[in-house]
Amino acid sequence: MRKVSYANLVVLLLVATVLQTLIPAAYSEHLDYDPVANKCIVYPTGGDDTSNLQEAFDTVVAGGLGGEVQLLEGVYTISAPIVVVNFDGWFHGAGKEKTLLENEYTESWPRPDNEAGWTGFSYIFLFYQTNDVPKTLRFSDMSIKIHGCSVENIDFMNATMIQIFIVLGKVDGDSENLYESEINTVFERMHFEGEVVDAWHTYNMSPIFVSGEQLPNILFKPLSGTHIIDNCTGINAGGVIRYDTMTGHVIVTNNDFRNITFGLWPRNANMPKFGTYFICNNRFTNCRMMDAIMLTRIDNSIIKNNVIDGSLGGGISISGSDHNHIQGNNITNCDITGIRLDNSDNNVIFDNYVKGNGMDLVWDGYGDNLWMRNEFDTVSDTDIIDSNEAARRDLEEQLKEVDAEKESLQEELESASTVLSDLESELEEASTSMSSLEDELSSVHSDIDVLQDQVESLEDEVASRLTYTTSGIIAIIAAIIFGVIGFLAAKRT
Image (cartoon, rainbow, N blue to C red; front, side, top):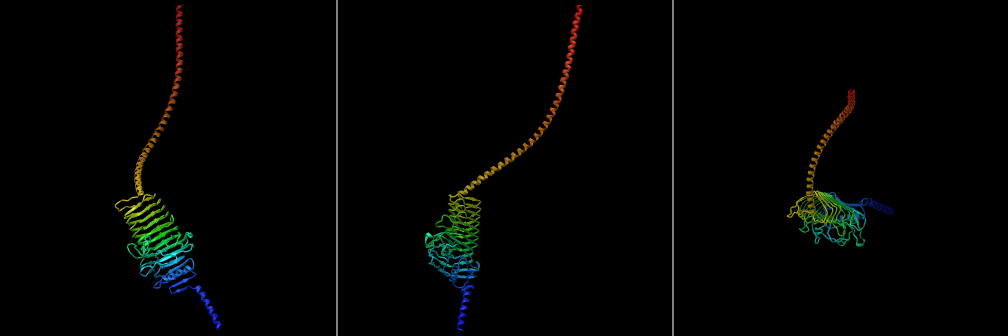
């Protein structure tokens, strides 16, 4: 009996082992993991969820690429930064209005000393890479809200007191072994919300920071790939969207951020040029320190149909960037410039509505750019008009003169056409008269021929009569002579 019990026990252990591989393992009552799908579902605890979130990411990363961390509907509370290494997958909630991730109010947020040495900044989430495997990181359908949290010695470039960092790059301690990393990022249907801290740092968090540059204690290579931010919202945020050392394509569309330090600011440490940007249909309201959209060394990009309302800085500023299109933007109530270009060439700025700003359109005069159909004015004491705008106005005056000359020439052409028409009518009449004269001339020629025949006939008749008459006269004269001779001869006799 004892041997049979041992055998049954072995069988039960084997069955349990098999079931453990087939049935999702419950690490706790608030965390479920499916190893087949490499998916971890996190349930709200009603308390501190930091450890569950960290465990969920660590588990999915260990499961390989293409994982998923899902937050169900509810409120999740965190008390410390969450560091995720080599994550490839989807981190999402049940919706912006359904899933909320927030912290308990605290005077300061901890500045961690993690294994990567990332100690220069504070963050809620830090995602970073330690290998060259291309990855896609997707974040969606949740709200992140931060309370309190002041942090000392945050540099002005972040313009925030606490960061929600999404930092993506290749970490490597050897500068000679650095190379470009390919990472794709997607942020969609996310909401970010912070609080006012003080007049200098303004707000206590920044939503999105994607970086590949060299930062304190870590070497990051430039990032290629495609980076998308779509249909996200935010309020009371520092630097909303910041990209550093990007060589890929960035698409920022349909976002709405209010009460912010700045909207979009790509920065670059070492590269001569960034990748291309497509920034369309976004709204940036009440930028409290800096320009809403600031682009540096970016070519062949499109900034279109954005609404910028209110800024202590400017609306759109472009520096060292060529062949960009700035079209259809509505920029109002900025303290400084609505649109500013600095050392940039071959840009096209058209169909923008730029009014109510300190200086609406300003260009420093060193670029060859085309400004067309922009509706703008200035409310400053000095009316500042860029040289291109002055050239455009001169061109408009020249065009007006050309139009006037064109109208005059048109009138002359119409008059000449009338004269030509009259001449053609006269020519037709003259042709008709000429034809009639030709007919009359032909008739005259015919009459002349008849008269000539008559003359010739008369000449012949006259000649004939003259010959007859002459012969008669000669005969009479001869008769007279002979008569006289005969008379004389008779008389002598």
